[in-house]
Image (cartoon, rainbow, N blue to C red; front, top):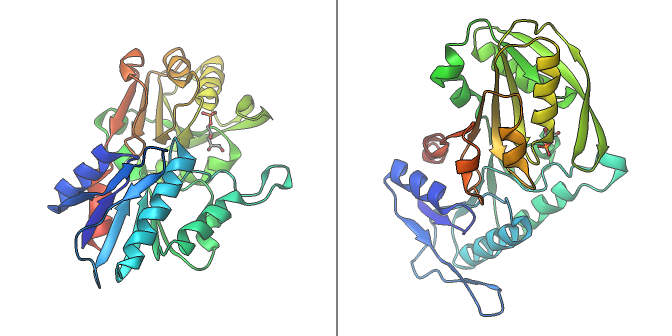
Length: 297
Ligand code: R5P
């Protein structure tokens, strides 16, 4: 097995390589005009190769890097090419909003056209992606990692909260991991683009500690409004377990000023900001989890 990484999240790729006791090939540099330069010196014919590259910010650049790297490995006759894309950019563009096209599917098609046979994702936003043919998609969940965090495990009778109806299944699965905890659902209304507001709560959160679970924190608006609504309803402590810390715009300030006590995310995305301004935010590593999945392929 050979491990390669694009530039999206080299610390994560290094930690996966350490967990696998494997060497990591960093093969990307740039031409003076900004185009990516891929150099693979080693022999890879008939080998199974893995490329670690979340397609987070800058998503367009990281997607192209992934495709170029896969195309190069295919040209060198790798036996199989697995893209390990813990955060799948454009995953939210799955064709639902205003009957738009499925640009997520287009990204899948690009990966296939580049020679990728298998895709490993983590809590991919659109379950519909798993139904597309042409690529073996393995989607794993970060929820067991969150359920093992001591601060989460030791909460007495927590209520697991989905911040919107789309996340109900995830919150139910998380509730099971915590010994069939109670659940609550917030109904989120999208005002425009990233702007949302929380309309109503189904479930009792009065004097209860709550854990909001979600797949993505982007602007932080969903978490901010969800936590405010829970506090309004009499919730006590509020924790958040969210897989992907996209953290665009003023997300850090928004999270820090929110009613949340603690926010846990994974290192699927390499932070682009200095995180010292948001001490409420902590990270758990997915390196061992991904290493295990890679090892078992
Ligand atoms: C939406 O369906 C997702 O599951 C997240 O709730 C959303 O992407 C979070 O975005 P933001 O942090 O900008 O509210």
